[in-house]
Amino acid sequence: MELKWLKDYLALAEQGSFSKAANVRFVSQSAFSRRIRALEVWLGTGLIDRNRYPLCFTPAGLAFVDRARQLVDSIYLIREQLRSMERGQEELKISSQHVLAVSFFPNWVDSFDSLLDGTLIRIDAVNFHDGVDAFLAGNSDLFLCYASVNLSAQLQRDDIESLSVGFDELIPVSLAKSDGTPIHSTQEGSVLTMLSHPSASFFGQLIERQSFSKLPDTVSLDHKYQSPLSEGLKALVLKGLGIAFLPRSIITDEINSGKLVPLTEILLSIPLEIKVLRLKGSESISANKLWRHLKMESCSCFEEKCSCFMSNSCA
Image (cartoon, rainbow, N blue to C red; front, side, top):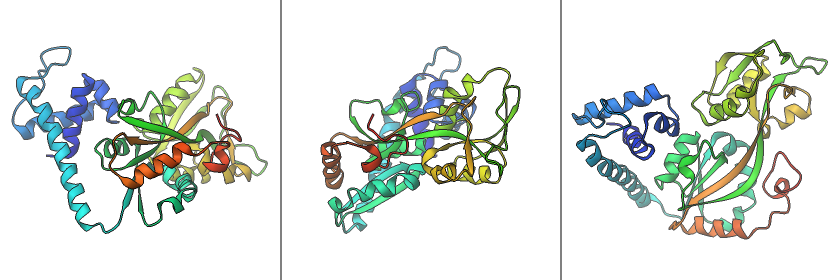
C-alpha cells in the first residue's frame, strides 16, 4: 500500500473522472489508472465499475471513499503527534515550490524574521503537486507558490486564505553569442531546441497552455533535455544546449550581463503571481501571528517589500 494511491483515489472521487483526477494529481492518465489498479489489487476488490460510463464506483468503492479519507488523515495526524513529542520550541512549517525557496524566500523571510524571534522556521522545498498535498493535509502551516487558476483547482476552497506577496515571470532564454545575439534562432520555420519542464509539472502545463499552444504552425519543437528543476535547466542553457523557460528571479543577473538573451518574438513569456496560502482555523500561533502581520502590512512596492522581480509598482 502506498499513501499516494489513497490520495489518487480521493482525487478520483472528488473529480469524477480519470482524466481530471490525473490532471489534479499531475500524472499522466495511464500512470494514474495503473495506480488505481494497484490499489484495487492490494485491497483485493474492485473499486471502479469499468463497464459503465460515466465513472461509476462499485458498492465497495463507494464505501471506501470515507475510509480512504480517514486513513490519510490518520497517517498525517500520527506523524504530527510523533514530531510534536520531539519539538522543544514553536515551529512554523512552510512548503514552497523549489524556485521560490531559493529565489524569493530568503528576502521575504528577512522582512519578518524579527517578528517570529524564537520560532524555528522550517522551509520544505517541494514540487507544486507535493506542496498542495502537504498543505491540504495540514502538514505545513503555509504554502508559498506560484498562482494559476487553471492548475490549482484544489486550492479554490472556502477554507483557504491567500495573500499576494510578489511577482515573477517565465521567460524563454538562450545563451548569447559574443555579439549579444542568441545562439538558438526562433525565426518562423525553424526547429526550436527546447530544454523542458516535464509536461505533467506545474511549469510544464503552464508553458504548454500559455505559450506552446500559441506557436505558429511553421515552428516546431525538439525537446532535447527535460528536468523538473529550473536551476538544472538553467545550467543546461548556460552550456548552450538549448532554449528554456526560466523564472526571471533566477536569471536576472545573467540577462543584465548579456550572458542570456530573452526570446520573446515567438515564444510568449508568462507572468507569474506569487502567493502564500493558509487554511482557516489554523492552530499554529506563529502562522497566525505572521498572517496578521502580512495582512496589515501596506504594499506600496512589491520590489521593495516582497522582492518583486517584474514591476516597480504594485499591481
